[in-house]
Structures are given as structure tokens and as C-alpha cells.
Image 1 (cartoon, rainbow, N blue to C red):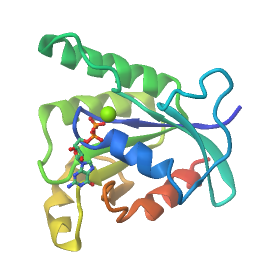
Image 2 (image 1 turned 45 degrees about the vertical axis):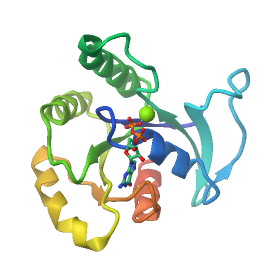
Image 3 (image 1 turned 30 degrees about the vertical axis):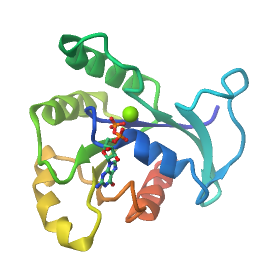
Image 4 (image 1 turned 90 degrees about the horizontal axis):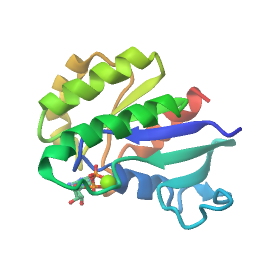
Length: 163
Ligand code: GDP
Ligand code: MG
């Protein structure tokens, strides 16, 4: 089976924007999974000769605000359990939030490879804001802009190293 790369993180950090960028023209979309062709949460991609499936998480709208946190945890755990490599997305402009810490703890317990993507670093001037994210304890840290593509090639290089 194809390796699975899950994109996880709290709401609004840019997971779906990153998913769309990785599924875009810079990487070839080989085929969609049979039966879920229209499911935009999964895409099969190729980078540097490696074929893998990327999975967006958190696409479901919560029923209520109270449910948001629980749902985020559930979806993150499912993503962890079903993936080979995890891209943990944080908001490089906002700093570390309690939800970020909680997801980081879940990821550490999984013992799966985690790549930390500090998103919304749209230009090099913003890079200095994101050094605090090293406190989360992950070694593979990339500063990216899902919106303009800055750093996403390096992120893909890091992903395929684990495949
Ligand atoms: P998700 O909830 O984690 O899937 O986040 P979305 O992909 O829906 O993005 C949430 C918001 O962040 C949207 O308004 C995006 O346009 C914005 N966003 C996503 N990526 C970037 C980025 O690289 N730079 C900036 N400035 N905004 C971004
Ligand atoms: Mg989303």
C-alpha cells in the first residue's frame, strides 16, 4: 500500500491550504483512490519519484463550539493511527497555543515521524517569529507559506526522506 502523509493541526492554521498546494500542479496527481474520487481530503501525489497519499484532516465542521476541541483531538488521533508520516501545521504568526501543545503531546506519543510546518511565514522577514516553535520539541522544522508556496518544496523533500 501507498504511504500515507497526514496533515494535522488545530483549526485555521492553513492545513487545507497546504493540502491544496501539495495537490496542485507542482506535484503530479497520479490517480484518486477508487470509490472516493471526489473526496478532496485524499490525494495521491508524487515527489522525487516517491508516490504517496496526502490526507487533510479537520475538514468536518463541528456541530458546536464546545465540540470543536474534542473533534480536533479525535480527528488528530485517527490521522496519527492511519499515517506513516505526519505534517504538523502551526500558525507561524500566532505563536504556540494550548491546542498546539496538546497536539504536540499526542504526536510525540505516536512515535511516528513528525515534520513541523510553521505556516503563514509569507516572507523571510517573518521567519524570526517562528523560532519559538522549536520549543515544541520536533527536530524537523520548516517555515512555509501555503498561500504563496515559499518553503513547500523543502517540506516535500523532508516528507519523502521518510518514505
Ligand atoms: P485549516 O482550518 O487549518 O484547514 O486552515 P485553512 O487552510 O482553511 O486556512 C485558514 C486561513 O488561513 C484562511 O483564511 C487561509 O487563507 C489562511 N492561510 C492559510 N495559509 C496561509 C499562508 O501561508 N499565509 C497566510 N497569510 N494565510 C494563510
Ligand atoms: Mg481545513
